Image (cartoon, rainbow, N blue to C red; front, side, top):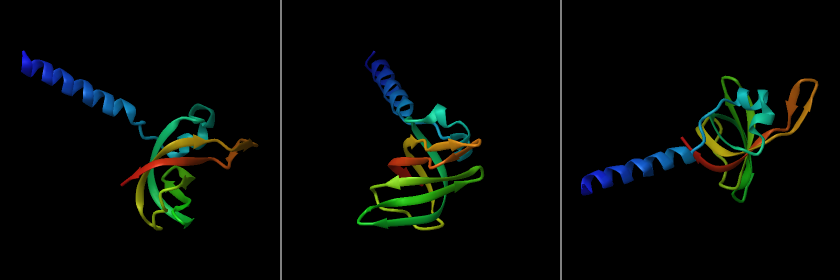
Amino acid sequence: MKNRSLAVTALLGITLLFSACPSETTIGQLNGEPGRFRGKEVSVRGTVNNSFGALGMGAYELEDETGRIWVLTENGVPTRGSHVRAVGSYINGVNWAGRNYGSAIREKNRGH
């Protein structure tokens, strides 16, 4: 009985851990459906094209096979060419003539 309750507790813990992480999406999906993601936590993976920072703060441009997006960070910027996973809140910019301008991700954490 003790082993069974331990297994159930472990299964619940793993389920909570994975349900707390946002599922990975593409940059093209973010830019194509900005209303769906506005203010929500998102996760994208890509290559760093540009990065600008000072005193641990800055921004970097992340690119995947579907598009590009800027990531705002307070955790220092990764170097150009780095492959990273950015997790954070999606900030939607201005939509005009069917194009999305000024969208970004406010980074919460980063992985590889």
